[in-house]
Image (cartoon, rainbow, N blue to C red; front, top):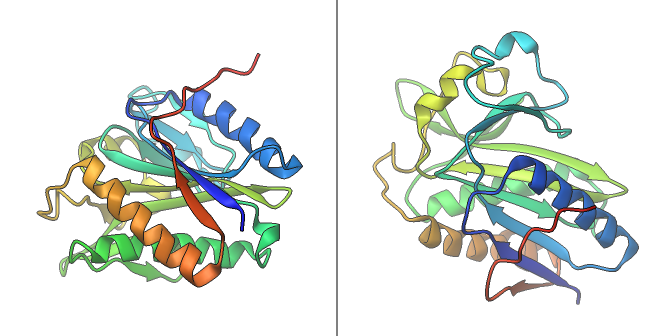
Length: 229
């Protein structure tokens, strides 16, 4: 049984540093010199452009920094109050099925939301997790992954309590006819620390118990980010 490391960064992490850290870790996981990793963090306000991003969906290019992400998907927003989970797993040790992995990520989010009596739902043709509010559907979690030599990176972002007006600078994920929401917007006040507890419990349920991915190891304190050089 291999161990999956669980890391939490308490302060917002610059996007470039997170990318560098992921690149280094993915290479180390592939060559067997590091454990798989689930990394929870927040970013300063920024927009990311996935490999399918349409420049016309960037409505306000001067509002926040824009980064090319290298992951699948289109434009999305990251910022304080949004829990990001970067998931670095060796998919070759499982069924080497990227589509099934994305579905597991969606199931993970849905199970977490269910702990707060929020019904998260999937939609055909729209990757991510949605909430039906009666008068419209709002996206509460985005999913964008990349796989290199069967090691995954990037992952999910769940809106806990971000500034939702920051989404106005883009067409989120290229979908203009739907909105965005958060746990707090839905009337569920929760701290990030409390939310992380549910994330870990649901990860164990969806990935470990159902998928036999191994054991989960938590660090006592966040690991400092090292700049490769």
